[in-house]
Image (cartoon, rainbow, N blue to C red; front, side):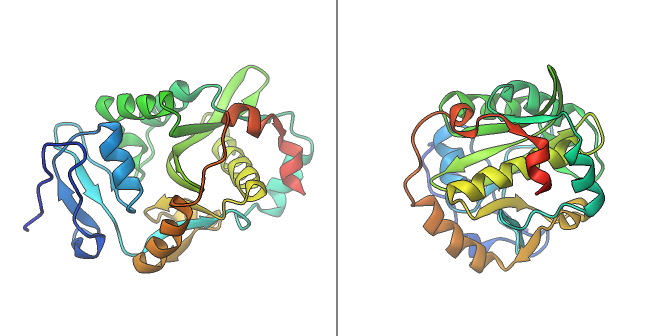
Length: 242
């Protein structure tokens, strides 16, 4: 297995995603660091880091790619009924560090949340401080019960991980994220790699070439100015039942 090694400079280029390995699916490059410049360059080209503690950074662009359309995040009839009487609310960027920490600590076999190393956690906290990474949180009063976080470039959202402390906590956060993004004119959420839970929520498998073409146009679109907290507001979960 011959995998390209990234250059030391954070702005060194990535290989073409079309050259990623078929097995393991999508492995494109190794090495480098998690500096904001490199991370943003990666996401902007359809590439993301995923590696375990003790490994060098590994960079991926799988084929197919798992994608949500923001107008098609599935909510079951039972889920919508529960939302109508739910007191939960959804907000953005009011507990980013806590969301990332929760995603790193809650074990979920087969999902990347268990692979969020301390270095990864620090990198995304820094991206958030620079205005590039965002969290959407589900709240029951003052209690954080679920959330999702990821990276936004232009009008494209690259989802990284979700967590729940109560049943449906992450599902409400994802539904709230999709609801707001659709309203803002952001059509897609990248979900990276397929798993049964994501598919049950409406995720689709797109050929990598289709994903990269759609993503490139969205990344190049002008990003709306201002705070996500203010723009997102506070969304009553009952609004997601409609």
